[in-house]
Length: 171
Image (tube, rainbow, N blue to C red; front, side, top):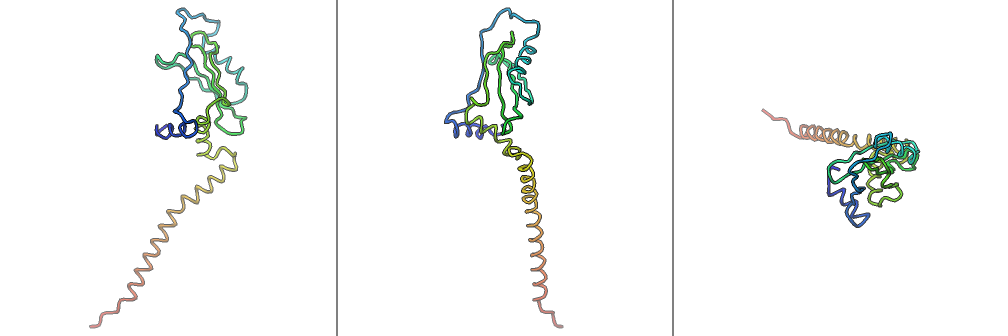
């Protein structure tokens, strides 16, 4: 997010607390026990079985020492509202499921944060709201142009009136 204060404000307003970062930790195994698939493949196969609805899948690998789990999230394209995402966390060494976080268990703050993009783009109501947003955008973008046109037109009229009122100089 561009503005940290805005993001934090959403969570304070709807949850009464700052956003809780979800980190799925597990005990480190010195010698990982691997299956025939590498852990990320195993995690991906499990995610496809658990999240069987259509939608885009995003895989986030652990970054840094604070995180040690593979996160796989999938947007549910069948949901009534866009940007509904379920998340799964997997052990990065074995590929086994550590934690499941469906959209229904997320906080109100996170749900509102996820609704901001559909609200901004008009995709929450399907093509009808997107067409309505487009018409409103065209109207709103025409206001400065028509305002300038009216302003310049009035300026011309005042200049003409001022020229008519001035008496001709007599010699």
